[in-house]
Image 1 (cartoon, rainbow, N blue to C red):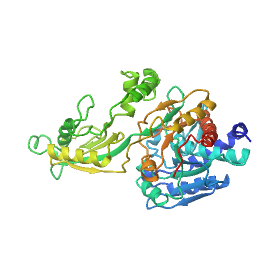
Image 2: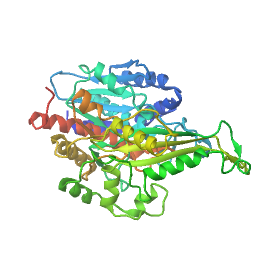
Image 3: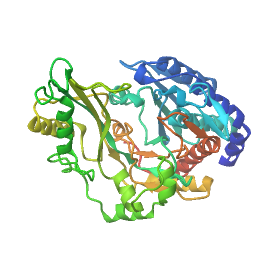
Image 4: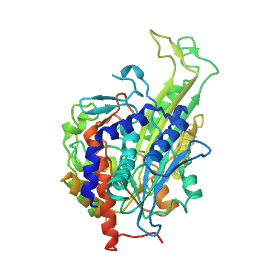
Amino acid sequence: MSVEHVHRYIDAKRDQAVDTLKTLVRQPSVSAQDHGVKECARVLAGIMRAMGIPADVIDTPTQPVVCGHVVADPSAYTLLLYGHYDVQPAEPLELWQSAPFEPTVRDGRLYGRGTGDNKGQLIAHVLAAKAWMEAAGGPPINLKFVFEGEEESGSGGLGEFVRQHRAGLAADLVYISDGGLHPSGAPIISLGNRGILDITLTAQGADRDNHSGNKGGVAPNPAWMLVHLLATMVDPRGRVLIDGFYDRVRSVGPVEEKLLAAMDFDPSTFAATMGLPTIDMDGPTYWKRIMLEPYFNINGFISGYVGPGSKTIIPAQAECRIDIRLVVDQTTADIYQKVAAHAAKVDPRVRTVTRGGAMEASRTAPDHPAVGVVAGAIEAYRGMPPYINLCGGGSLPNAVWPTVLGVDHIGVPYANADENNHSPNENLSLQRFFDGIHVSAQVFQALADADAKHVLPRRT
């Protein structure tokens, strides 16, 4: 049986594929709130077993990991497929056009929390494996599945899980589908991801709020403490001013410059995905900032009174929440120490703590042999070559694969660029969903063919 039989099977089973995804989306799995995550692990494992894929729910100190496998010959080429079944909180609920955990089809898209990030993309791999099993007796390579339940909370336990189960997870390549396609709809290969470090800055003034008239100019204002500190950390152009922050950032070489220049960029189209009228920069600058440069972000500021009307107080406390996106060779530990040292030097009254999980940056070399093989598989099905994305702007725990498992990784997003992941009305284009199943099936065959020609690195 050939891959064409598999593609025909996938097309014939579209309705069943959508129903499978709906079942998974219908089960809440909000890791930040510990809502339904363990139940979702059992649902996902049940779906895989019903397809004939052996699957286990493996408990960890936090959230369970669902592992499965389709292994006919342990010595054959092995692809490990990673994804996460946990999702972001659905709030604010009033902005959803339909209930977030009641998957609904509108205008060719399936709406619901987790449709694109990441349930629809991980289940595409599972459905591709099932198609190979049903239409051809089994996939042409070994497949292993690792689906975790705390990626949206920092993947704090994934590294230790992989370390403990390293022998059973042994593979020749890790394949990840997460994030969106190019805004034009063109396919993408993503070779890495930025890391992330969450930090909270807190400042304390008096032990209570004070009248801003009677005590103004006397009582310290912690909001101003943080404002003044933040102004010493980042300049108006976004350049980070902390000593040593850029020390380990790699320079952009000719290979990277060529790939950046080749990336398509239309300011209006890209701006629309963010709800902006336009973007005032050229393509290489845009892509370099997203892929190859770190970013220091304020994502929340809490202080004082923000209710109706006015309350003229000097707040007693202030808190600023920061996430820093890091690039390869920067480490979360080093950057945290630099931020904490800067804060202590500028204003010792400000307390610096980490919050949530931290993820390290990771990047696979663009000349890795599997990159061309996967690119060829994508073009064979989609009819267009993928853009080679040096690094995704978001964060994933992909550093565990080279550092713990000793295996390189390649990302191939399947979701539409306007999937609204992390936002109300998250959605997945059904055509992109079906394309993802087909592409996974094609990649399995392409890797088998390339392995037969001995052009792919194998685990030792």
